View (cartoon, helix red, strand yellow):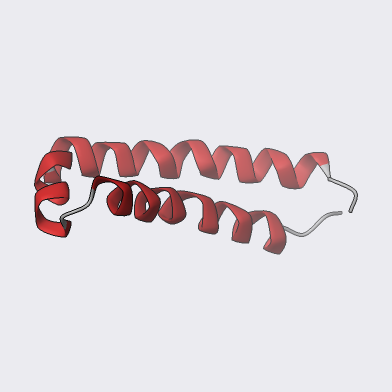
Length: 67
């Protein structure tokens, strides 16, 4: 699989923005410890948050059209 520069650029920009949004939501609004208390597992919250960032980034990479 050959990586395309344009697709990587758009996926990286999306990753940075999406990650920043989730950091603001989780740390600023919801308070991370509140989520851990609600779910009951630190690891489960971390995995869920990682998937919420990584999966959409992969989707952006896959669906970005190359010229």
